[in-house]
Length: 80
Image (cartoon, rainbow, N blue to C red; front, side, top):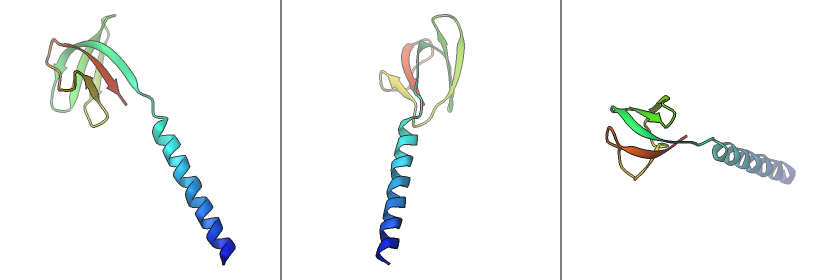
């Protein structure tokens, strides 16, 4: 019985550690550009090379400055 309890604790611990590693390893995309379009859930920016990017706005999207950007504004975006 005691060995089974130790085994369950070890398995749960390893599962927790694996979940944290996977969560922290999500890649962040950093883009600097000018906002060309903004709707409720989508953000379109144009970078310095002239390439357009469309991003879905959510909890993982960060802006610099920390507010929703206005169309025509140049900002730094961190997108997961």
